[in-house]
Length: 423
Image (cartoon, rainbow, N blue to C red; front, side, top):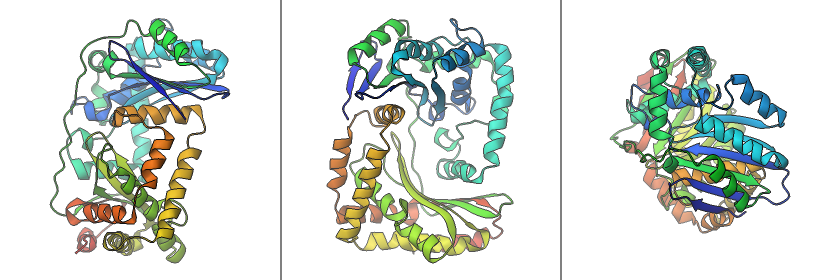
């Protein structure tokens, strides 16, 4: 799976991922901004702005104009906001490529941000906040961010606070957008049965008026911790939803392949160690997973699980013990081979569609600044040794990198804190 990248003189980046004979074309426009770029007063603005870009443009004044036109193409479309980027996309049959590209470009470049729709959308955003507050598996992620980073951008919710959502003015949207939606922070990605030449033609036609203002940076995430961290959001639930997380590495770090396989060993697949131990042997959970999340300047290795409240302490001890084992002894050649095949297999399976391929390259571009195809990623995974994994485990499975975030009916915090240690 190959790609072609070109950077225009104004700094706008274009990535074309040809997928011969694929019937669908995916157009994705990404901008390097998200909640990590916001001040405290701006928290939630990136996500709110994402919503507002669909509320009408200079060429399509009504909110229904964009929806009807995309529906008329048989397109799938949406947008998303994260800590470090915001994306707008549409996917349709390849015969609609030019029109699809023009529509996505229009909503990205020319939103009118009507005051009436801002007022209506406040209620939508507030209900979205309420929805996630009622979903413990989602809420616990925000609890973890607060625990690990505190009152700085990386520790705040992408959705923002209710207070901020209620007070944002149209001027706030205009100012924020003018600072960040500029050529040097914009990436256009197209995946499908299309040529680089055709993509460049559409970019030059539709993006010629994009702002050329300078690219604004953001504050760097500072990692500070001396002892295990614990934060509990008390909520009456049938389960304790918890994330045990360790401060790890940014996405550019050479140890990422070893860390990726460490996640495979612990909590990826039904034969992973934690799935076998917690579900098959103990019957203590329905879901458990481990994953590595590397950002531009920081990273988290996280283990997520939902258990009965009465077994929270027991499961915490078991997870710590399984982590400790991996830092003390190398895994067998048989297990190493298994996790490599599982990861590589799912890597390829996960990139069968144009939308997954477009997002794959877009995220790489923003988070690492260096694109790698599947063969390069597979090669790096194949080179990892059992000793590499053990070294990484020993480096991150330590008390000064250990954190536990919980949503549930935990009454005795001190009792849980006593077992939260590798000592």
